[in-house]
Length: 160
Image (cartoon, rainbow, N blue to C red; front, side, top):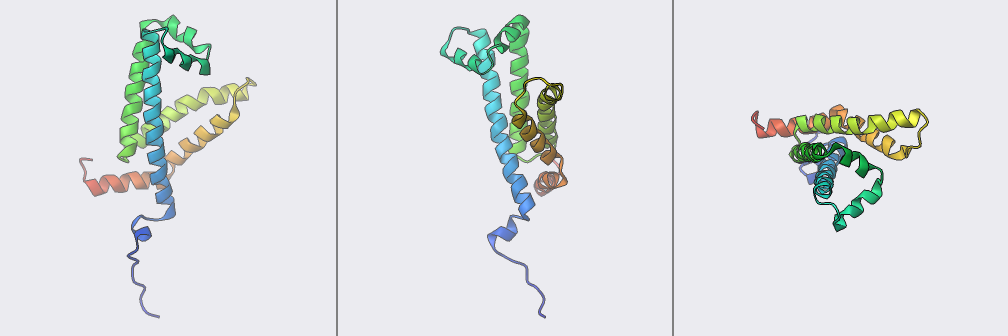
């Protein structure tokens, strides 16, 4: 049997299916964190400038506004800091940086743990987002996702 020649088609150059899925997931998460950044900034803006059409945002979680307003200026500062962290995660995920994968993992876990605890304690929580966010966090921790990030870093050099 003759030796097998390496494939030169485009699909072989993109890597195994697991790595392609990981690259797509990182891109989708980068978009998600970008949108989350915009929402955090919008929340901060509605706290600073109440009574605008953007106040319709509070209809999604009506009780939240009172909690934020009770914190005063600290709430605005916290939302701006959150927006900055989300933006850093978004850029890092888009660039497939390994640190951004772990930052996204931490942000997702911090977001899902309170809901999961409430759900298991019997509170009325929509369980589907808990499962979906948990699954994404687990996928971020998988070696195949890290491989995609590490290969990108290795390809760009040690300064990436």
